[in-house]
Length: 426
Image: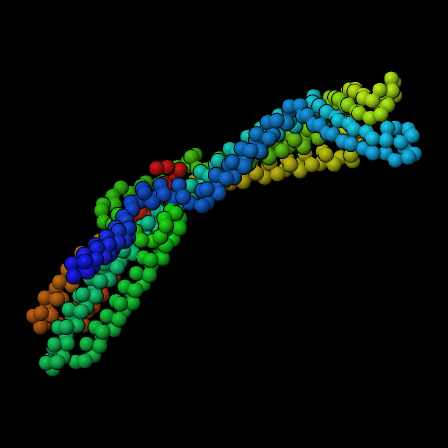
């Protein structure tokens, strides 16, 4: 009996420990900063951008070897049948080593190096932009989760108010003091409240799944640290903010630079190329050396080649002009983007100010709705108003409470958008 008791005790302890571990895993609480840091570490878009940087660095390393001499070698064995074997050895082996050094290539070598370096800078700026976008997405989802969590709590609180009112009206109806339609109106509102609770729970779950994907979390078994309570003071004044720290500007500046370097590369095709080559060879075969009839022969061949473009019906010149037009178009795009970014900052300021005004009005409405609910509840308890008036007051209170939650969550999201638009990094 003791053995059975000990076995059962161990099983219970294991189950309790497992349940405790699972409970702790599900109760992980994350802060806003933690979520953004996780997103920067684990997001696949950022990791993809890093791979593009590594590829650009590899291309830069390859281009840096462009002006250095190249060394190639080859080894071959041959068998010749008659009548060729009457002229050369029937069996012949040879080895060649070829060294080539470009002396002049119209500046294309150095331009290629600059081009590959600019490509690395471009990919790094692209990664910076991706990081800002991922951080904004993570923060937006974070505050959506906070809002949904608050909405769930509000829905449950509202349901309790309706349930209490339903109980009171049901007692009055059973006593013959009120009509059934008063009871039905409350029940309709109860159904609507249950639906709103389900919507809030679904929104909460979906936002957590999306945030888990962006932040690289293993699952959605986590909770958020913040709430939408707190002060929201400090109206931003309209100003001509110049967002000079935006990654988009760095990307476009590098794109212009790359186009300009492409012009130089194409212009280099119109200039002569000079290269020096040396070929060392060694052959082995019966009487392969025609001078002394020895079975081996070694030698060296030097060559200087000059390639001069003479006439191509203007094709190379037109390619340079084509690239110049593309460069000019890229410059115009950069100028337009600078103007649009200024407008984006101004729009972000206005949106943030609107959110602040919305909070102020919502808080005022909530104070009024709370007082209205208190007065109607007191009058209902005193028998001077019907239950429908209390129901209307509860609806107004719930709407005012929901509005202030939405307004505060919107402010947090618009604040993050303003920081991104103005180039403020944290």
